Image (tube, rainbow over all chains, first blue to last red; front, side, top):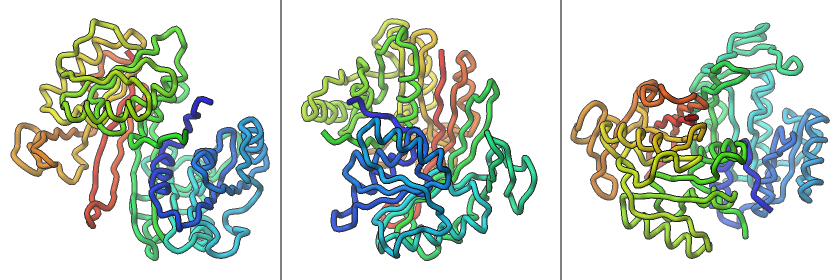
Length: 204
Length: 204
């Protein structure tokens, strides 16, 4: 089978760092916001991880199921709410959330990060990323709080945008591994648009 | 065989864009600065590309050869100078240079980009990236010109750093596809360091 190239390129580096960890650590990994037609948990499944994923949207869970069936992979993706994770403390050696957490208000984002840290084993690795105020859509739509807006994708959706150092406060009890600020310019529907992200990798 | 995870994560997106091109386009790809112990041309080889690579450093070519033997891949990596490419015009459907071109003075960088464009077929895709002035080492070492320095890695090496829009001038005759500014903070020898890159994807 030809390797699938996943869209979530920053997760390749996270996978590489996870692979470099001692085997003593649990190979159990959790994805918060795991659904969709090309679920990145498959990257980890291919490398021998025991995968679990949750998603708030049943349509995204179904798309991930279809991918799992087509590729003969049981990725363990099901309905779930990342602000209230249905797992006991220190269940996973690895926890991540990619392009998901910013679809909530900042008060819920904080809850979710507390939950992700709770289910992570001591010394475990975590990846989470944020939209940044560099993004061209920051400021658009009804205002829900500081850099938080209701915007239209296919349906109305919340987007929360972060200043460069704003998310540091969530991780003061963790060890810093990596932070990447990415400003992407690309062509979308004929226009040059600008997207902004801030990715973190941390150790509990 | 378990998939190798390559360090050059931005090339996963380039690979994905290359894979989306029509098959009418040549599947021949050139890497300028292709050597080393985990050559990214292998990503493209795995996806059926006919690969060619050049590197100025014989040690890097030998490391790539060892990788090729171990993995039973003939990547076609050999000695070569990217300021004077030894290929006829419009040879390749895809050309890239990753974390390489900035190891030269800006006058040579310009020559190299002209060469990369020359050997690229019309409508072909090109990836090239630059160090940015966001990098923590910008300003260090003997000054060789505007944001160009001789710095020490294992051996003395030239590093040229670019302002955010400085490289646009090289691509005025190409179609813009994508630009990414990346500022990475990570731990290196116990210190939190900051690296800066600007990646481009363009169409001839």
